[in-house]
Length: 97
Image 1 (cartoon, rainbow, N blue to C red):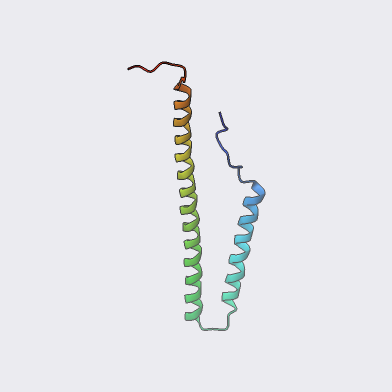
Image 2: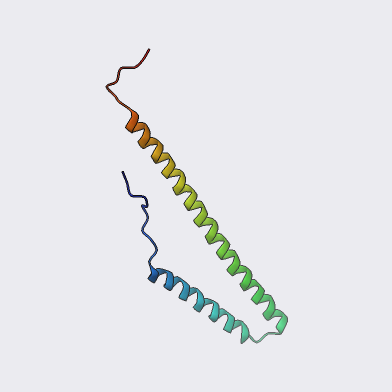
């Protein structure tokens, strides 16, 4: 029988790197927006666009993760069914007529 999880777990270092990278990007763009030589309306429009982009990225990441988990679950169920059929199959048993 195979192990219950075939994909390696996410390490704390990878999680920290992703969080720090996201933080640096957000702070950099926010500082850029604050010092941009335009009026407040343009700055607010760009900030709203940034917020929309971030929320869309989080939503897309969640949808992709959910789809991958669903695919993994379906493949595990199919694998369990196949293993059950193979365990119950006896090639030397005479067929009942």
